[in-house]
Image (cartoon, rainbow, N blue to C red; front, side, top):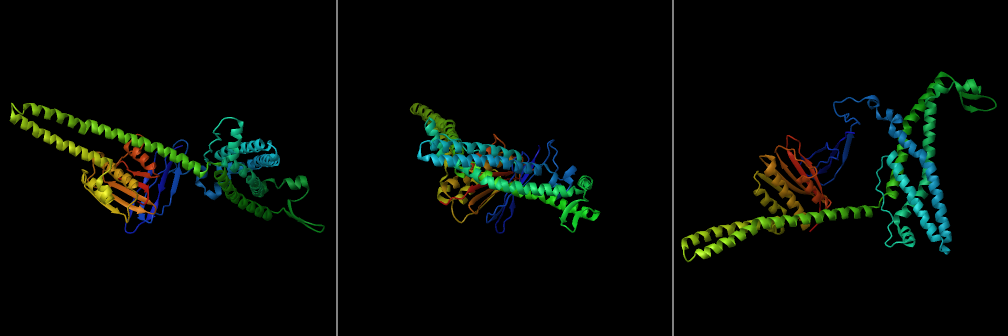
Length: 491
């Protein structure tokens, strides 16, 4: 299915209105930044498309049910039927889960006076985790909820006793048991409400189609609303039948939204109790980021070694050879020796400049001494394109964040010099809430690719290692605007 997604993020900052927009034509989420100073962000996403890749975008007419308002087509949409099916299946599954969990936990707790209760409790928790796996699959298939599965129980030592101990100590296992206990009363309520509204709405809405059954087979004019020994009220005249149909239509139109409200609670329960905990997710994210940091550091060390080997080291070797030759010619040809010493002096200056550049690439002294404003102005002065720099920071962030911001701007300005064919560029740095925002703009040809394997992809990986984000807006005809968002950490 071809999908286009557009994202917008907004903030507030006085007297500034710089807009960034990313069209996620590659199927990933697009993000943009409209930067103003308070850093309030509001996310909006829109996706559209169909299986044959022909999206129902602007200028393309909708077909079939797509022409109807959402409230009218909701009762016959596939989503509504999937959610209703989820609620129907929820009751029998929750009954089995509840019975298993209550039985195993109560029996296990009662047998704790003996050793038998411990493995019974562990078996009950293992069963609850198995039911949780089933519920995640059901939520993914019918509700479209992607829930990260928690890590399996891994005892530090082998053997059944180690597994039992790990199962009983696992907070995930107890959360699955809690889900089984809480879901049963909720599933009973949701099943009753959903079936009642669904059956009542469709039965009343289609009443004119089956009303003839009552006088033919039941001997009465229609549905009985009231009856006693003296009189009865039936829905048997055209006006009453029409009103019944209208009431049924209203109930039918309202039922999908009631079903969606009920399944919203199920989504929250599945995500909150059956997924990986926030701590586990954070640990996994930090482990991934640590790998990125290690790889980046190794790549930097290789770059420094290559620059030293191919640059300053090679020049110093040539310089030593030239000075040796000059020493040999000093007695027999002083003028030639003086000329060679002069050339060696020039090589020394070049080698010193390369070493300064290399040291600046590792960490510039001006950044440590004077902060981002002076350091970015120094970088901008070496760009082949006129660059304006504006840094609006009332305090300095942590040195690590300053360094990442500096090297981000440095690499982006190198791209401007090499690839953009721009006539002007700008660098803006400001703080938005607890985030440090860096934006580099140029009026070049655009077409910057942030896909895998590009320099921008590597830069995005470095930012992601510190919970940062890189947003690229570079249409084919230009201009290009790259926004880096970093966490603000006070120095």
